[in-house]
Image (cartoon, rainbow, N blue to C red; front, side, top):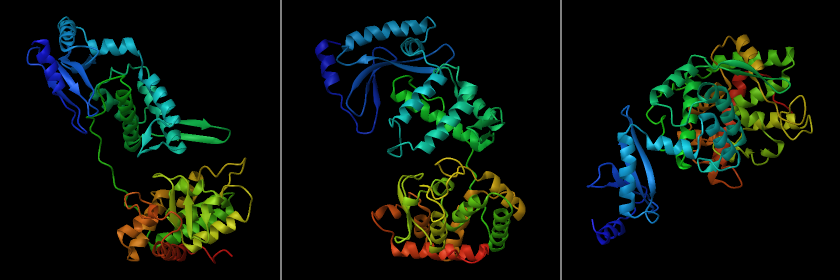
Length: 416
């Protein structure tokens, strides 16, 4: 094609908002030009390796290369393919020479510096801690030494089932008194694969690789959590809380568990609650960090009374302080296990208390939108509409729900 015609063809290409597309050459099979939503144009080749795997690699951008220069380079690279080479893999290995462990480290470092966003915001400290645990306890032990371009979908599935079957399970000491129980199970495996997929998407954005091997891995459907406490079970749970509080050294944890039941909050929203986040007059919790960002959460008076009494008992910044140091209460696993054993439950978790709270709200006839506001679900955006106060309808609803739960728990008179 004459140079003027080539120039005219390239000048006639236009970006499509939100779409990345390729125009393939009619003269040389496997050679084309990619146009990104930004308008950037780059030359690419597509081919199949000896084992039948389809690959793509970029030759250079338009401007750095003319059409004819790019076509000549494409012939050379496609000739290498015919000779049994894989140009994409060679380019990646020469430029980056990373394995999956090194990629995980780079991803975590950028996430730590706020360069990786989750729902439009930098990942929270608690999310980063979870990511680091999944990387160090599951991804690195099983895949860390593998090259980033060396995984197939089948190998990712093997990784998923290995985690599910407990191949990475262990008991790990954390700090002076902490103990992490790394377990298997499909839930753990799915989350590990999801994180690995996020890491690969990051690698694609960084230009380290051109495909995500996790993309077509079939993950089992989530099991919906339906467990909640009925009226009698609330009573059994409340009696067990009182017994553990009186007969063990877990009185503080029992208070935190009671507040979880009365608010429907997530575990760490209460364990890491700061006194400055408790707004007695505003009848709410002004949470600085939740799963979906900062929130104002309506809170019933009975829960606020317990929180107020607890804050008056010490001077720590956290409502439920750690026994040692200036931090917060970290774990309620052991007291929760004792409570459930006394109550005769084998399937109740802190999240069950959150689900039970929603069930009581439903029993009282509140709408799904109101219940979403009480629980702080981001989909409803209810609490986020109020910059300085909680709507009185939500505050009254929180009061009635927590009152009924407190009555069912049968844990004595309200704190003064």
